[in-house]
Image (cartoon, rainbow, N blue to C red):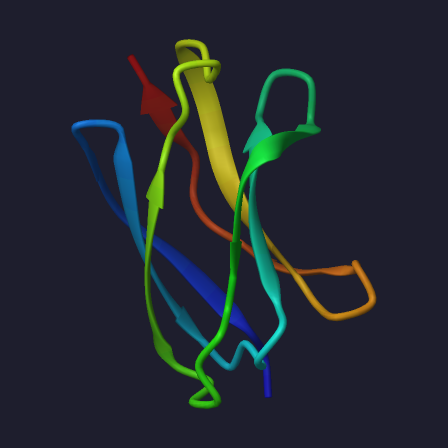
Length: 89
């Protein structure tokens, strides 16, 4: 069961993403592509017992323009999936 995380769109500073095979408690974080550093905020937690679904993540004003990607972390904090790169303007 390979987890998958798909970036769908970024509109009005809200990221839409879909996921497959992520278990309850998994976290989805935003990563700065240039520095490869995980941002402390926003963090979305998968709350559904169904392993497939959709996330909407609101970007705080502290997120600066640049290239980013989403990364899914399992319950132990290990990376299990990541999205394609996207740009925040």
